[in-house]
Image 1: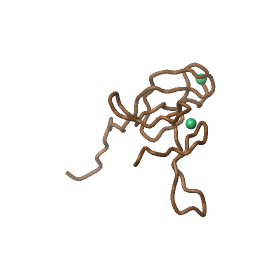
Image 2: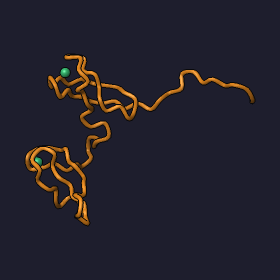
Image 3: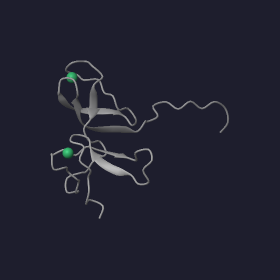
Image 4: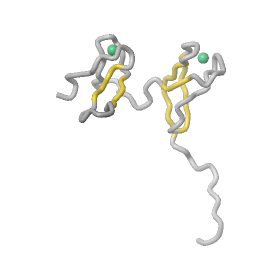
Length: 100
Ligand SMILES: [Zn+2]
Ligand SMILES: [Zn+2]
């Protein structure tokens, strides 16, 4: 086929899951295009909402939990360091043992 073909209703990939608002701590089930990380909170109308774990473990999967209870980690390599490290976002303790 030649000519101008306009696609209507093309589906963008969407992520869905539990979201939480950093501003008012409201939790709700959100759906948003993949790549969108700031969600509008239906409770306080700020853009402080974020998916809790759209790509996280499903029921039955293992996930690493820090001793402080947090499941959020930064994976980073400090400038000058040869190897990277994984640190808990909440308490800053390095996450060791999971990959061994
Ligand atoms: Zn809110
Ligand atoms: Zn921690």
